[in-house]
Length: 309
Ligand code: 80F
Image (cartoon, rainbow, N blue to C red; front, top):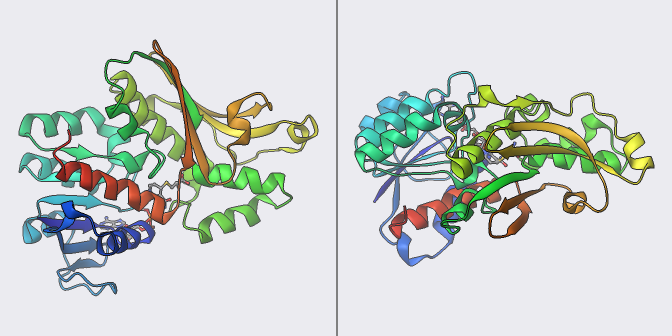
């Protein structure tokens, strides 16, 4: 089975490493046949990226003819391109797609899913929400549950910044740390202004409520001018909260009291609270980080090879 990796930054490199280091039986016949970035296509599987051809992602698809595309390229929330065209083209040819890139799904979820269904191909996207902490893939194992609402912390960078600010760092110092740790988007304003969390709650709404909304339907605020001092004096914390039910979807900062389970979700951790007709489920784990995001895609690859839908 041939893989084509798209994007070879923090997450792409961690994914390649996992693929080589984890000795998993399902992966015995899997190989990387190409890696494509803005710099071109490399047809070898080696750590140092040295492009063999100056082609874009669609040309690379023709050149490599993979069985699976693993998209770990930066998010383009304006158009979703070039990843959006890549997914549609791949899925139409029966090539499966695994992605950590939220933008195409946050913009054109319905089109992508319907293309996959009508061509018998699959798209897996656990890493787009909470990285390697199951959120999308959690839904697979909750059959027939009627979800009423979901609420959580879905951006690692902003939660890390808010936590470090409560420990005395300035906003800029905390952001710098988050960037050094590989949590932030290439353009960190996507984290700070709430866009990344809005993309994630859009994807979750589509999965958990079959709503087929786009990020353009979601109201969001970020933490750009956040003041946390007063909340801290009251013994509370500010968190960037994402919320969705069957009618409403939003992201905004909120003051959280000690009684709320989200109060103790600090640093790069993210959390999701799912309320349903059967029970309430909460899940907490790292929401960002190169290894964590790569693991989301890696676990998807194994599920795909096991024949999961
Ligand atoms: P990084 O900027 O390191 O690498 C991006 C790569 O994409 C580069 O190799 C670049 O050349 C390539 N690329 C960009 N445009 C391209 C194009 N048109 N054609 C081909 N290649 C192109 O980015 P990361 O950190 O490696 O992230 C990669 C993707 O994973 C992005 O879509 C992220 O949104 C996504 N992701 C990253 C996470 C992380 O922790 C986490 C999950 C998904 O919660 C948070 O704080 C979030 N900021 C992170 S969530 N790094």
